[in-house]
Structure formats: C-alpha cells, structure tokens
Length: 105
Image (cartoon, rainbow, N blue to C red; front, side, top):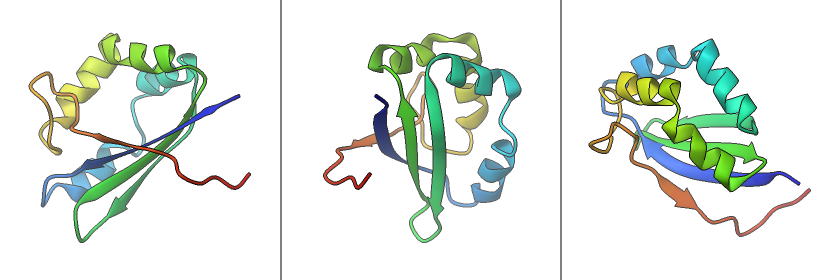
C-alpha cells in the first residue's frame, strides 16, 4: 500500500519562473533516484500570491523516502535549487509536512 506524503515549501520572490524551468524536466538521474526509492505520483503545485509550493507524492516506505536525501544526486539538486528557494544550511529546502485529515479513494 502506498503512503501519501504532502508538504509545503516556497519559492523566493522573483524566482518562480526559474524554479519552474529547473523542473521541466528534472534531471533524469534525479527522476531515477526517486523511482528506485519507491516514489510515484509526485506533483508540485505553485500558489502565486504567497510563493508557496504544495507537494504531493506517493511512497512505498518511509525509510526509502528518507534515504533519498543522502544520495549524491539529491545533494547536487538541493545545491542547484538553494538559490531559488528558502533552504537549510545543508541546502535542503525548508518544508512543512502536512497531516492527512481526509482521503476519498
């Protein structure tokens, strides 16, 4: 059974188009890492007024999801994206996990 993950991030003001450009397409090796770590149905939505991003992904396992952060390609991606979005000192994006309160299957 897939685990549904949702979280919020944001984009720096003025960097919205660059953020979109960098995701279309994402790096093929990053896409492969996501898939091999059990990620599917990954979408990110942008809300222009607040510069907020809503991300949704389906994952197979929490440990596999967490392991993505230690891959070389993920580390490079974070460095690549740190200039367009608020990030931690390790360049990982600031994000807020969301708790699912309703689901209709």
